[in-house]
Length: 152
Image (cartoon, rainbow, N blue to C red; front, side):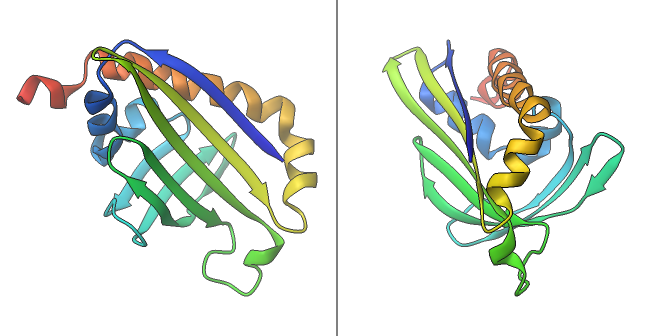
């Protein structure tokens, strides 16, 4: 089961990438995320603190793809680093492609994996799909006022 959304961001791909690297500002544009910590680099671990409805979850995710200016992806599970991980894990993938010098196509994908991944995705589809659209719109808005761009 996979959810995805693509949006046009009227900012250079370098600006969008810098916004993705700025963990301190993730809660400003990532719905439900209250904190994220760690190092954005291949094979590193990030700690997420998410609120989903009235539930708080704290998954640890491993960076599985890191291509500067192009791709950031991580894999995580509610059963992080556990033998139960094959039951359910999620792969989150952000991709960006320059349209021209000032415009970026940004894709946000999340794949539910494992024995119970697809059924959970189907059950939660109506609640989850709008979150992907909201995340992309929030990131686009954040990139318009990216604090990192002002520091250059």
